[in-house]
Length: 440
Ligand SMILES: O=C(O)C1=C[C@@H](OP(=O)(O)O)[C@@H](O)[C@H](O)C1
Ligand SMILES: C=C(OP(=O)(O)O)C(=O)O
Image 1 (tube, rainbow, N blue to C red):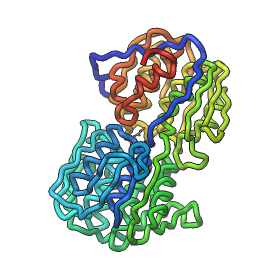
Image 2: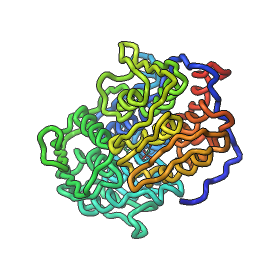
Image 3: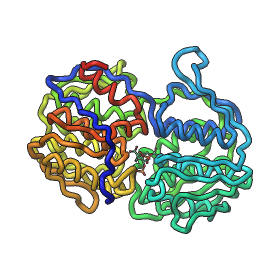
């Protein structure tokens, strides 16, 4: 991997002097917000998103859809309570330029939308976006009738030459490097002339809950979806052509962004309540109830939300995280503080996330005196007495929150570029110090 970038800003991660006892309201889910924006933009009538996430990834999605002609009005909801965005679909137009930043959801979900525009749509983003896999989307769209110019690497930058419609039909893809290839093709498929049949041919498919989220949200806007988990053929998803309904939806809190706060309860032997934790959800963060309980805490889901309680004792864990890969940095941070070793498996594809997360976690935890080794598909973590130092973040929001988790238990940890949390949780530093009872 490339050398850690040096940012002048170092944030002294707060050290916890006692058990935390806090209620932390977590903003909306990135994954739900960005799917809801795409579906609302493709709808036949206006819709509402209540309590949307306002972060770099979701604002990039909104900006891109606006560039294509969609109206997105930011304001209060129809009942006058809380933030809500009104999405007013319109004919999709090119030429347009889309900045994907380093958002997987924007770089994968929008090219299929762009095939429906009536002109060229140029896609580019942060340097890292040129390295993240996109071939599954590009090759599939070409097979379904789209014209796309790229530099032959199957990655950004590229131009989708929208012609106002896409034939659609059957296509095979290997989505082993990202579940977002499948989600991307399904989300726009009701608007393809023949819908879509996506057949995954790879030997593994990560992040299944995120594909379930796509299927659930498509059904909620009236789409007909056949898929493996409700009796369909294994590894095949079919979406029929149909109108997309405009809906009024409330975005769930981001359970993956609840992770550092739950970890704080676990590590300090304290208690943290996350209001509005959904009783039923497709978000992978829901798995934290089981994973962090396995590492030493306990939790209770009530009308108020989820209350997680720690004992201050943290146990190592041997776990396959392929379904919930985005939780890996936070789990690795907790595991580095445990009383026994951990093995995190099934997450080779994290090498292609915001940064190479397996290398980044290994470098940074070891830089504080830890003993982490990379395996072919994950990490082996032997807890050691850690010391303070700079924790580099590689422009990865989840590296920053992982460093903050370690800083709770290790004095003198400084997080480089904590502002990178703005990708999905811009208010993180203030929320973290408030949780600890410090000045906000
Ligand atoms: O569809 C989504 O919203 C996501 C799917 C997952 O991507 P991968 O399957 O590429 O890991 C996940 O890691 C990412 O944070 C969000
Ligand atoms: C992998 C992640 O993001 P993206 O949507 O950019 O893939 C993540 O948030 O952990």
